[in-house]
Amino acid sequence: MISISRNYSMTSKGRVLIGGGTGFVGKYLKQYLKDQNYDVTIISRKNNDINKSNSVISWDQIKKNEIPLDTVAVINAAGEPILEPTRFWTSKFKKSVWDSRVMTNQYLVDAINNMNTPKPKLFISFSGVGIYPPNTDKSKPYTESYGVKEFDYLSKLVIGIEESAIPKSDDVRSVIIRLGVVLGRHGGFISQLYPFFRFGLGICMGNGSQFFPWIHIDDVCRLVLFAIENNRVEGIVNGVAPEIITHQYFAKSFVEVFGHSFVLKVPGIIFKLIFGTERAKMVLEGQAVEPTKLNSLNFVFKLPDVKTALCRVSKE
Image (cartoon, rainbow, N blue to C red; front, top):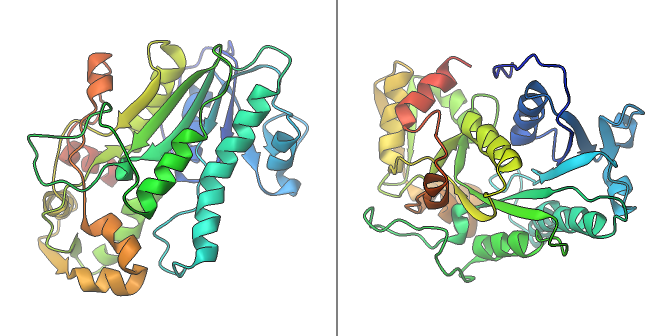
């Protein structure tokens, strides 16, 4: 079950519209923002989920510019998982990944642009740290000011996401959060590791020397709330914890927290066979990334180090 502390005041702070509200990040955001006294509407691909209470609307309605009139913020957390081992890395799947992120951004931005009534004050979208090339120097982490350019499919995808995430109106603030690996028990990277722990194994991908930029789902939710309620948050934001670690350190921390002792190093060739060379790079290479803008805005991470974050995961 998703459990985040609740604020019991009954006064609504306004409506937040979430694309991808049934996914890993979206589910947590929905509950967290409701607990912070926001009304939440999610966008569903399934028409039978639509209801008259305004808590669920369809993407078809978004394409018709039907954003709820009392919406104060729009968040796009939609996106088909890229590292899905049951899907081959075909042109068709690449298009599906692209459309689920870039086109959904475009639908939401178009709907905001076409509103005649007072527009939402904020549009938040999620991209990723994969926009930064792999690096090996911990003393020179990437900051938001780095001049990005396309160098592979993932960087092309992230650039596409970010270019599609800017409404035309100066009255609508745009925040683009470049997420690291999101840690949480009920989805994403952690849920993929759990089956191995039935056998007492921690998994280290490749030689483990690659950087592992990460953030706990609780801090993702807190960051979104911070962006909604703080007008100084604007533009690109690195959504990563301040602790820079390698994948090997993460794997060792994982087994330590969960009471195991053995880390299995899985050769990179295995991931290339499962995911193909292009996708395997996403786990076998990494970036040292710093949350420079969040630090300058005095955002305080609830879970700033990975061992504390994994302890939180173990209790979820």
